[in-house]
Picture 1 (spheres, rainbow, N blue to C red):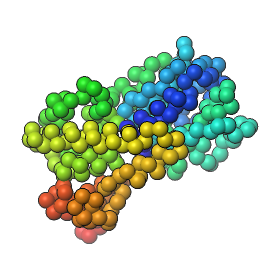
Picture 2: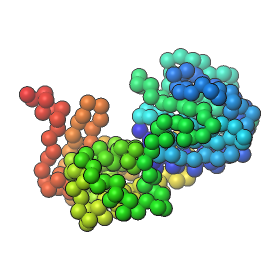
Picture 3: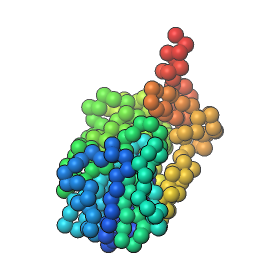
Picture 4: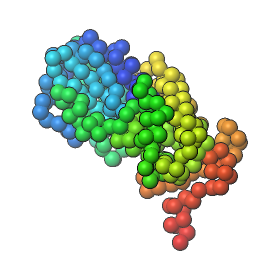
Length: 287
């Protein structure tokens, strides 16, 4: 799933390639991708893109005197820049293509979604705050006013584990499964540690890990073409998705805890005092 760093890089890429250009066609290929109907998708046509902004994991494209096109790429969605776009209208079918936006230059982009769980979402709204997912977002962790005190306030009274708290978009916007693993590894903390139990020293460590992990990922992605961002994310991850590999810090074997629809990765030596965490899915199978 694209998270804050990749969406930030997409925002920068689209700012360069979209801003100042007119949308001549916006074609839905998978009708299920559209989550709003008023104004219609055609209200974007004939309008110039004036800005591209990021809200957590949402991308919003503003048009001159018109609506915003807001999208959430979900778990398996992606944006593909085409210059030029393929000739002829796209054909609805079983393929991954969900939406195509064409510019007067002949370039444009496709939104695609792999797999069977169709969660890619597109909204056409007068204001991005009208999108429910945007309206309930917590603060952006890379914002200038997001300091250590703000993080401490957010986590105080949180009875959830750190892994779940970091992924909650209404608490902190933009962090997902992969970067929560990376942040906790950098902070040397167990994903199962209670968020409200942090000492001041631990809060400092978590804040520094949160900011540095996301900032470094954004810098690695900055300037890359949209098609290269997925590969850059994967190569930059130290523990997430690397079950069975040696930890780059201590050399211990990276372990995994599996859930019904996701998994987390961690280093026992760096994060849990050398103790492996119980894999609940495996435990259930052994009962």
